[in-house]
Amino acid sequence: DNDEMKEGVDTAGGLKEQQLPTSLTWKGGKCSKNKCIGRVSIDENFVIEFGMEVHGKVCDTWENILHIGNENMQRSPGFWLHPKSYKLHVRLSDTSSNNTGYDPNMELEKGGIYKIKLQSIDNNVSLFINDELQQFAANVNHVARYKCPVFVSDPWYAAANVTITDLKIYNPK
Image (tube, rainbow, N blue to C red; front, side, top):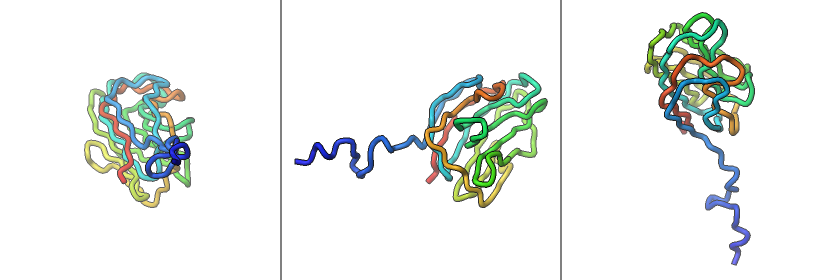
């Protein structure tokens, strides 16, 4: 009887503690500084989607909406409002830069409600706002992150005056 040797091993033969959370959902809420809603592991293939209502500006500096990463320059990804405007600032760490940009060529509006989706599938990164493609880049190698905090918003910037709804982070494959 080998039952003692099987402890800590799942039916697939891997150690249970090596299983990592590759998805996260959050019903939503208002952004506030250093608000961590969970942890997630993100590899080269991911989808992040959420609703967002813009209530206004709080300052003349960068205002963080959502940031996945253990430190400021781990951006897997990060979403901000530009200083002095409602332009969306989207950054993703990849193997060539920790701050590759995917800013859309549009300005959001105070009182506006938007559906945001950033995805990286088979090395192609796409940003959609209200289901319309805003930015696209091919041959992108996202830096995999393990058990990273999901901030709404992060501890390094002012919190955006935004409410997030129906946040979904998942691996599409």
